Length: 108
Image (cartoon, rainbow, N blue to C red; front, side, top):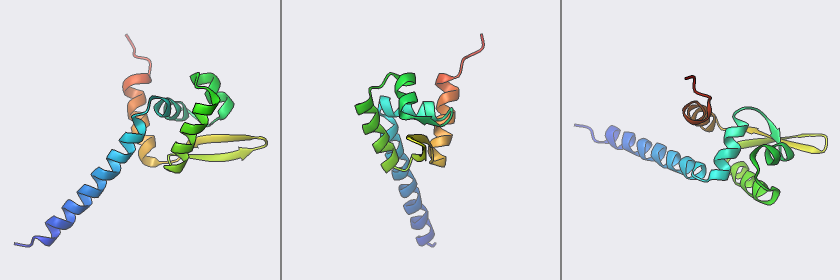
């Protein structure tokens, strides 16, 4: 019986679980989750996010920095504004699932 392939599979599984835990830890913050939920619907600048979400600019900037450092969002400068969009394929899939479960209007 070969143990090495099983160990390699377990190592890969542990790495995947570790990555998933890191992403879920980031998503566990209400402000960050709100931001990602809004960005799952399209690209927004800071002013738009502040108005739509009711998160004040200092907190919004702090949370966008975390999301940018974790490569969950990307930025694009358009004139004097910086626009944010979802960048992580994993985050996009999770946000789609969360949106469908919790944010999408339910038909009655």
